[in-house]
Image 1: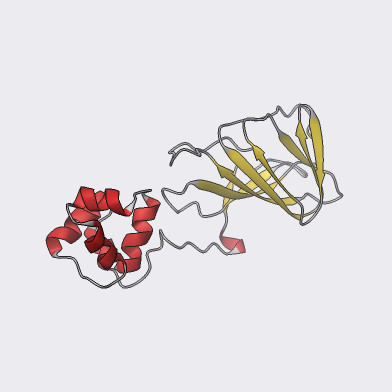
Image 2: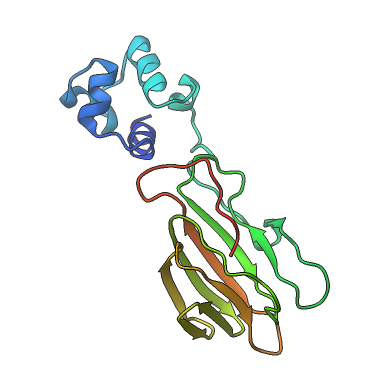
Length: 191
């Protein structure tokens, strides 16, 4: 239970002091619980679960919760926003079953031609890592060319769009952080 309480506390962005105050225990006692030096009473465990917004059973489960560690194999990505026709953009979600995450990771396969594709922008920050192929990431005032292994990190409020530039569609790992100030229920529009 100890490491699980610490992980859930951090996931909820609570300090040791704040969680202790919510539960009605001392900071030193809660620290001992997190380090496995003390076992909480049922009453304290119920208060912990309530403050951490989880079922009390999660505090005592033997296995690490799937919500705390999620592995997505290459063939298990979730198709999303598939384009039609050759060279059309498509996206594959990563860790889509994980709730409460602060980052939105996905694979993007940008189109070969932008055509009338509008620039997109949204709140947050964005990270691109080119896994395969070559791309152009276009901003209104600048175009960045990227090759395999290259990456770029930018403020998502900047209007942007992306296209594959090689003979094969590129594969890009994209990670969006939607709300730097805290968790968000919104999923931003795809680039």
